[in-house]
Image (cartoon, rainbow, N blue to C red; front, side, top):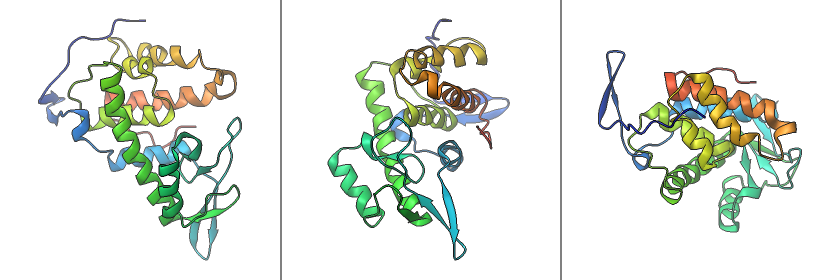
Amino acid sequence: MPPISATWKFGFLNDGGTEVERKPLNQWSMSGQGKELLKVMEGPITRIVNGQTEYKNVILPGESAVTIGWGVYLGALNQTQINDITQLVNGKVNEGQWITEAEAEAALQYLIGLKEVDLVWRNTYFSLNIGNVTQYEFDALLLQVFNSGYPEMLQGYFVNGTDEQIVQAILDKYRTLSGWSINGVGWEKRVRAQVQVFKHNTYPSTVY
């Protein structure tokens, strides 16, 4: 693995002639662009009913609990959080049930809030020493936590190397996971999209 850069940037960075604000992780929230990319990555099953989009609750291969809307996996939540989600989607948390777009949005926004706190916690708990970041860097790191938040993966974004070296540094950890043989192709595509966000402030419109 290429070395991890020990140089952290604070305040404002001149990025291609544009002043880019940098702040601590706990002062950012996911941007609209980040949220839209997350929706592309999660790609739920939908249908149109009376001109309105609805989203199907599913149990994905290899999982034992229901995923609601855009990647809201109940198996990763505690009971209090599940109760909150259940209220947000008006009790429709069983496999095969359909929720409205407003319900899907509410569940996703709730999960985004949890993941934002989780990213800050991981930075502290694992002593990752992530300093001030830009909005797009924050989005990329948060997207990573949505999929898998191992410290080695988060550190991979700060490898001092090419885009490909960064991608491979992140995938090194993925390759040790039991689901790699089944999910590896999809994981790699997500990582490549996230590196584009992190390094170039480019939010892909398609991932898979």
